[in-house]
Figure 1: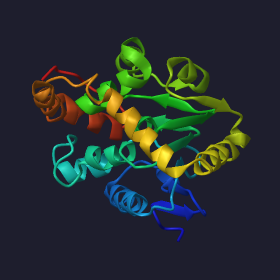
Figure 2 (figure 1 turned 180 degrees about the vertical axis):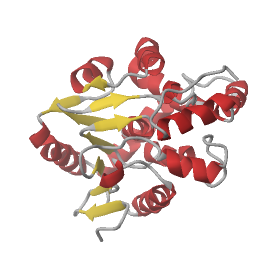
Figure 3 (figure 1 turned 180 degrees about the horizontal axis):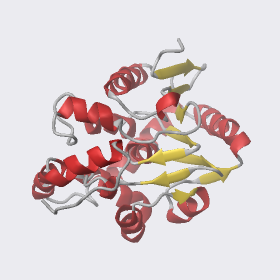
Length: 260
């Protein structure tokens, strides 16, 4: 159906999930989270699925969270209240039993880039722009997001992309390790399908076990006590600056920071 916020295309042994709010640049709202949660549950329970492609409809991959939805749901402007808690659902992408491939075109910003990094493999079109912009609105990603960035791109590149809050082009993203491959725009879909079909053609028990192996090898390497960081994140997301940042973004003006 054209009104589905997640379009599911089933192939013999792989699935394509398309974020489908093109009029909003595929910004993630509550309805999309719920649909994504259901789709991931379906994938987890289907032994015939051996790979997953995640892509975006329209002009871009995903522009991040729908801040209007966040503001309505949380009542505080930002912060992921009980009705809007994307982290747990998005994390399921990383823990899928089969490899996930992100096919990135156009903008992949903030939560959109997080979705891509939670996938096992990432292919970007030459026109893609990847970035993390929470610093522009006074927001702080969770510890799990920082951990994923440092696992993939290293501390120096994580600092660059977080502090500057400036999207990078596909070539720079490849240098930073954020994507595995860059292809011409008109070859993106075919490149993602080729990887999905190649994965699906390999021994399924072996590939599933390999994914568990990779996950286990890094599970302790980055594990540190971080309850204080979770508390800091909650404090930042519920701050007056965070509320001002979201309102300024929605009102298309520069925020006035007060450091409180």
